Image (tube, rainbow, N blue to C red):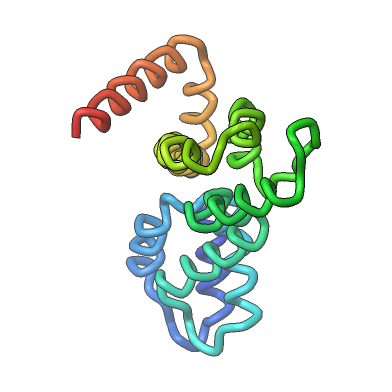
Length: 186
């Protein structure tokens, strides 16, 4: 079902409220960044749970709750990562395989674990500061990947297909590099 059809179905489900076509068009515009699958889920959930025609905000809330339940935020705050590293140092040795809690932490510690285990307590302060800076950089990159992925997912199917062509991919890469350079300057 297309996006307009989903919102027409929502409107038809609340027929007593006499929702105008203009309202549906406004909703369509205001929800354009919500991916199709999330919009479809949100509309179905609102039809089944709302007593009155839902606001754009209510639909967005349902979409966000569903998205977070399916794919929780992979970015942990540094305080949790720091605690995880300290706990791992107490329980695992240099040659042990540490079951890191998420892919970002695993990637962060891939080349640092041996070094951390072999340091004295006096040397660890600088290493922790450098590790924190590296982690924060990884988080910024991951956040950008998530946001740009969601933006691409919300595009119409034909536009997404065009983006997958090699010429546009090169343009997107070029733009993302410029964005990264601009962000570094700020």
